Image 1 (spheres, helix red, strand yellow):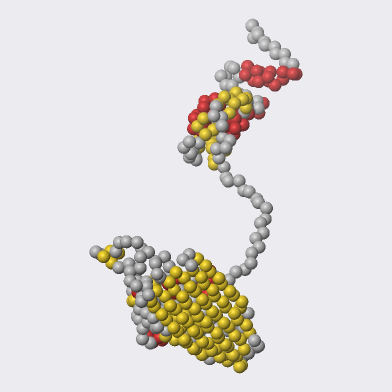
Image 2 (cartoon, one colour; image 1 turned 180 degrees about the vertical axis):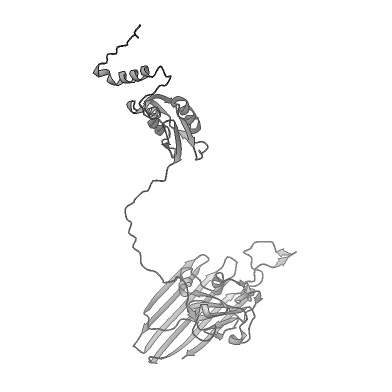
Length: 392
């Protein structure tokens, strides 16, 4: 009778874990199965080690696309990007022993991109958000100007009643006294430059000649709603505002032109203290003086005086003008609901009627533009206006 050989194992305590694994392997060798306890061997993260291990980088300054390609080669990482790289974008490069994450951040400095590590072997690029900057509070102090600028709420000339502009079924442009002062307007030609649909013609050098919506006329002027079809050059020294009402309106203004009318609203005494003096000088011996004085004398009486004097030559030889005007007004308020305004204007205008250059062969005649064609002594225009007005 033969006995089977016995195998004796000796296991020391310090090697208990490894011996236990060996024993299990030996015991199951006859059956061909190998088992192990997974809990006895801790799992290692090899991918994490790739981004934490320092490496030697030597990437010089170059284009960003080339620098990223060299970084892939030296780091072994896969770099992906969902953002476009600007053509000509440069990388400052990186040199030294760094972790891949620190090296890539140094490589992307100043490019507007930053890395996002999804795992130990892949990194994606994203575009940086613009940094939020907080500045110190700034306090702005300014004087409040005119409410609404040059806007006008309503007028009475269009319908002969106080009506808001938005309720008037007509195209209306109002040039206010503030706009007249800000842009140094002095005559009707200056005003209509800012009125759509109206232009000013030469008027043969002796009158205002507007063309309103294609209709040339000198009979479309009104003062405070009263016809003013005298042929002369009007001044703005005593004008509160100019209203251009475009379109047919014979029902309100009577005969006239189908294109529309231009109505001047005169300044009047209104108890506001007014003290204005204007002085002007310019080329060709131009001189102009204007004044506007107003005062309330009592609760029921106010006066106002507007005056103007102008004298000037022109670039054309022998052409000159001299004009002056005065317009006093008086306002009486006998009751709180009644106001009576009376005024009188005297205006005198004397000037050389300059008709410009004559035509020749389908165009302006040649020669010096300073030449006056005609006799200046007999080519003149003179206007004398005396107008009184009263309104209740």
